[in-house]
Length: 295
Image (cartoon, rainbow, N blue to C red; front, side):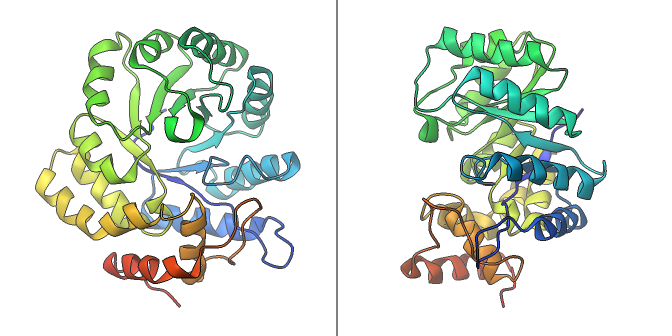
């Protein structure tokens, strides 16, 4: 399975009246992304509010995405949790629903050692016959999956890729040099994704792609092809979104942006709340810069 280009870290639409998940809107978003050129759907990741939805809604959202996509692009489920046992349970459940891979974040809050991380991911990869994408995002987990540990894990036949969200482009070369068994390298940081791909990365799991999927797809294609100048021109249109979609904790700004576009209702689960009024003009301006229409 090839995981490359623009893969969207898709939001989970909800109803403003009661914060229930709007599965029809999620299916519509999946269809729209495929039409716009998105090359993969990552459902129930951080941007999908996986940590705060009920387990029932978690699995139903994955089932909805798999059905809506119908094999046209890869569907990747976020299955990481704080414990190894729970992560295995979620990964096995997602595999039964027909996903193409699991995106497994480093355990948050508990701060495992590098050996603990190695054993954690090895146990998950041993428990399922499903491609595993490692996910390193120290800014959220207080835990950094070091290159040396990734190189050890890459030897496992089920560990096929890493989403590297440190924003450190230098890690691309380090991963290429140190991984005897090559794995696919995906950026998890929109602001540096273009440089990441020009340095040898294969794609990005993107928040920005939620609102500007066609532009993100074009930028990724150009960067992967090594067309640096053309990729930069496209990326300049997206630059404000890369920054301003993180004015408050993800996915607060991107869900509000999608509501301004008429794609979903402005609803998010506590403890997250709707985007502060003071940040809304900046989001609208960033959308305009990317030629994204709002209502």
